[in-house]
Amino acid sequence: MARYTVFLYHPTSQATTDPEQLQAEMAEHDAHGKELLDEGVMIFGSPLEDHDATTSIRADSLVDGPFVEVDEVIVGFYVIEVPDLDAAIAVARRNPIIHQGGGVEVRPMTVGEAGVHGSVPA
Amino acid sequence: MTDALRADVPDDVAAAVAAAHRDHWGTVLAATVALTRDLDLAEDSVQEACVQALRAWTREGIPENRAGWLTTAARRRALDAIRRSQTLQRKLPLLVWDAEGHRDDAMAGTMADDGPATVRRIEDEAAPVVLDERLRLIFLAAHPALAPTSRIALTLRLVSGLSTEQIAAAFHLPTATMAARLTRAKKRIRLSRIPCRVPGAAELDGRLVDVLDVLDVLSVLLAVGMRGKAEAGGDAGPRAAGDGETTRTTDAQAAVLDSTVHTLQVLGDLLPHHSEPRGLLAQALLLQARASTRIDERGRPVALAEQDRTAWDRELIERADHLVIGSLARGGRGPYLVQAAISAAVAVPARHEDIDWCEVVELYDALLMHWPTALVQLGRVVAVSEAEGAAVAFDHLEPLADELDAHRSFHVIRGELLGRLGAHEAAASAVRTALDRQGSAGESEVLREMLRVR
Image (cartoon, rainbow over all chains, first blue to last red; front, side):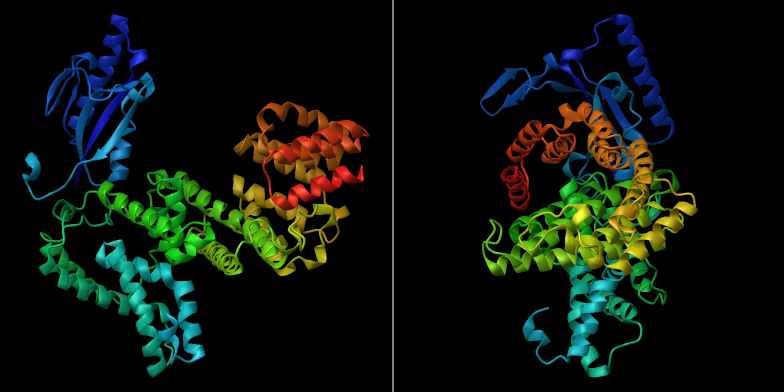
C-alpha cells in the first residue's frame, strides 16, 4: 500500500461568500470524508482556515502571509492509503471540490522504513 | 551491441538476434520486469541477454524458441543482480505489478526489507510458461499521469526496445535530452507508483484511447519520415544540413515506424474484441503504402489526383482494407476505424476517378460524431468539393475561417476552391495568405509556383 496526500485547490477570486451555499458545500465535503473513512481509504483529512491566516517562517523573518501569492490556494487536504496511483486517482476524482470550481492535486508521500521522517506508522 | 562484438559473429546469427530483439523485446522485457519489478534492471538484463545471444547462438546454433531463450537468459542475469543488490541495500520502490490490495505490497516498499518477496521471485524463475505481458508495458508507457512526450519516448523504449540514440534521432533531439526524459519518466513511475498492469474493464476503453493516441502520433511520423528521406535524396534543403545526421534520422524514423506498426499488430492480437487498434493499424499501413508518392523527389507535396497510384504498395492497401472491412463487419464504429475507412475509400480504387466521394463524405460525418474538430471539418470540405462541387464546399468552408486561420492547409484549400469558382484574384490572395503561414519548404515552393502560373 502507498500513501498519497490529496490537496484541494480553489481559486481565491471565486471564494463562496453566501453562507447558505458555503454550508451546503461544506456538507458535501463532510459526507465525502465520511464515505472515505467508512471505506477505510482515508487516514486523516481537514479543511484549512482562510488563506489569509497563513504565517510564513524563514531563517531571518516571520511573515504574515503565504510563501507564494497565487490565484489558486490550498483549502484543504487529506491523506489516503491505497495500492497505487490508479487507485489514488480514482479516489481523488470523486472529491466534491472538483465540481465546485476547484481541483485536486495528488502527491505521493515518501515511503521509508516505519517511522522515518516523522511519519506515523499506519 | 557494438560492431566489435559483432565482428566474429556469422551474419545469420547477427540477423537472428536483431530480429529477435525487434520482434520479442516487449515480451522478454515484460517477463523480466515481472521478476525484477525494476524497469532499469530489467532493461539492462534484456540488453545483456541479447549480447550473450550473439556468442551463444554462434556456438550452439540458433534456438527454436528465441523469445524463450532470451527470457531465460535475461531473468537469470536479473536474478544475479538482485542477489548482489541485497548486500547493496538498494532502497528503490518496486514497480507496482499485482492486482490491487495484495497483502505483500505493504512490505514491498523497498528492496531491502523484501525477504519473502525475493524468495517468491526466485521460485518464479522456474516457471516454464512465458506469459505475454506486453500489454502491461503498453498501458504503463501510455499512462495518462505521464507527460505526452514521455509517453511517446517510453513506448518506443519499453515496448519496442529502441535505443535512446534512435529515439532522440527520430525526433531531432540531442541524445542527452532524450536520456533525461526517459530517466525522469521512469522516476515518476516509481515515485508515484504508477502500476504496470492492464486496466480493469471499467477503465480499459478510456486507457486504450491513451495508448492509441501515442501510436497515432508515431504513425503520423510515417509521412514526416518519408519526407525526410525525400529531402535527403534531393539537393540541400534546410534540414539536410549534414548527410550523416539526415541518414541517422531517417534510419531511426524507419525503426520507429516499423515498431509502431508492430505494436499495433500486437495490440490488435491481444485485444481481439476491440476494433480501434485494428483501425489505427489499417491507417498506419495505408500511410505506409502511399508514402513514396506523397512527396516528389524535390520534397514538394503531390496532390492526391496526381499521385502515381501504380507506385502504391497494393499488398499493404489490401491488408488495410481487409482490416477495415472485417472490423466494420464486427460492429466497430470508433474514430480510428472510421478514419482508416476514409483512407481506404481513397486508396483502394485503381483510378482516382473511381473514388466514391459521397461515401467519403458520409464517413466524415461519422468521424465528426467522435472528433467534432475544425480540422476534421476541413477534410470533409475537400470530400464535399469532389462530391457536390466547389460552390457547396465553399459554403461549408467559410464558417471554419476563424478557427483555422492559423493553418496553412485551410488557406490552400480556400484558394483552390476560389480558383475553381473562377474568382482568380481572391484565389491568389488566399495562396499568398497560405504562404504567410507555417509549412514545409516543399509546400511553399508549390504555392509560389501556383502564383507564378497565374
